[in-house]
Image (cartoon, rainbow, N blue to C red; front, side, top):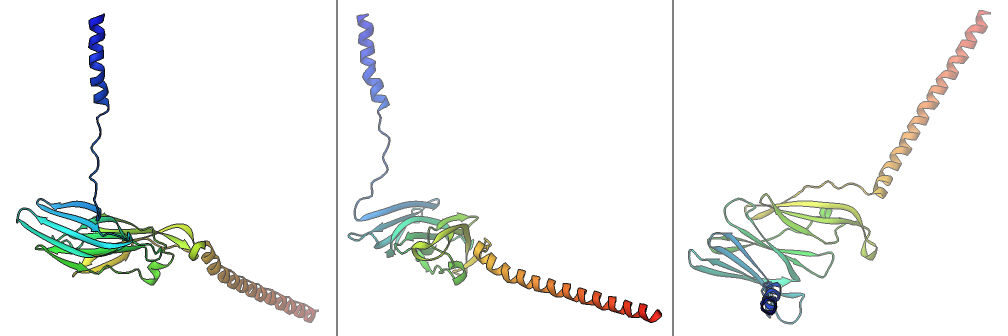
Amino acid sequence: MLIGCTIIAGCAPEQKKADTIAQPKAPVIMDPFRYHKLMEVSPGQYYDVLSWGRGATDTGSFMILHSDSSGRKYTTTTGDLNGKIIDVYNADMDADGNPEILIQAKGKDTINYTTLYAFEFNDNKAQKLDFPKLSGSQRRGYRGNDNFYIEEGKLIREFPIYTGSGAAATPTGQKRKLEYGLSNNSFTVKQLSKDSLSAADKAAVQQPQSKQGGKQTSKKTSKKHHKAVVHKKKRRRRHSSEE
């Protein structure tokens, strides 16, 4: 028994030690850096996207570090950053074999909620692409909360639609969906969703039509009634003349 207890006592610390093995921690981003994401676009082609800056957190700068390990070439692309980086996407929207790196940043202003920084890389050279602003119809009811993702090589953008303005704005439960492509280094935009009218808009549109329909119906009814009266009078006159 003494030997058995000794063996058990010797195994217990090992079992406890095995149960308490710490999981690997995510790499810590040290100041002045705030964000980092690594993307391997193709074998040997790496893109490290970072944001950095000391002081205010709503402004800063970003860096795109391109490592061409097979060609042993390394390039850096930098720019000013408004807000903080939410995510980074890789696409080839024009299917020319040159990757596009898209940086999504979030600002404080809920109207200009999202800023997208886009670059196309060709032969280790970065060309800046101007991401289009929302048009008047696309901006109607926009209050931010954008959701971006890549689908079949295109950049998809979704956001909820609100009614009203300011603090009184309320969500309608609908979403607007846009598809972004690239042609000759210029963005193309196509709306995939169909905006439906709100209940108030529907009532405003349908009400004049119902009134107009009611007037037309009443006119038709009055004409029929007039014809019937005239027909009865003619019959009476004929009947009196025959007598």
